[in-house]
Image 1 (cartoon, rainbow, N blue to C red):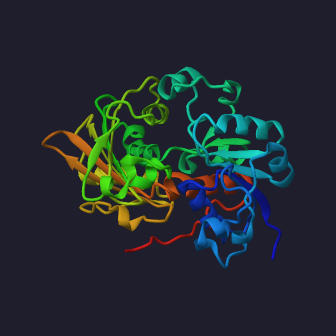
Image 2: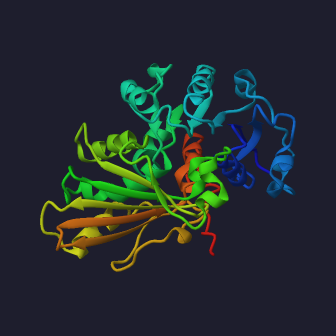
Length: 352
């Protein structure tokens, strides 16, 4: 077997950690040599996740997170730990010359004051914010290739940004009054024990949460503002919890700036993403569903021009764990390590 690049994973026990381990189990260019957890150290990945039985990765023993050990063993490290926890580990690894893909929110926002406002925590390493590259491959692949620190986008923002960017870049819609209505499966809330995510609390119901104050709001505003060249952009971002395991469906509403035919709007989207194989712009009259992207990197987009309300309606769907987190992190790592962006990610959806 050809030499594979050694990588590490800090925080293997959460859903994003599990998903990364699944994707790395068959990756041809990377080898997971360190997987860490403070609570499960000493066990093998197979002990923790029987799904990895029979794969060499399943025999890897989980260790405690140690920056010196990670730096000695790995060329790149994924951080799948909560915000606030990731920033110190990222700084320690960057100082030791290790490439880092951070799946938390700690380096997504360019402004430390905005981070403190939305996350209730002073950023302890603001000097790294200008260095961190926002890891959306369709927009920033060239910068990711030369980055040492990549801030993996949030799941909701990935769906919202990909869905609205073509319309904003082409000037089809007004930049104010945008409403983004997003719905996520329960894995988006993490693997921690919580009454709100118990089966009986989630099954056979549907609820909104964090209306007007979801922490992904400034990330969406930052990136959409960059797309259309408008600093300080404001959107209304609203989230809901679906009784499913995986998936995000985002419906965005924006006022049209001028009269646009459905064919013209569709052409704008098709042309922008013609060289982005993971973004599938559906034919007019078709709308995407979460089940058709499950377990993959695809973002499916459907658009509707509503002349009666003078609005463009955009529906985008992704798998929150793969495209919205771990798969996107792996795509960024591929770019940072000089591999093909889709190495280990040529995945067909899990249907049904």
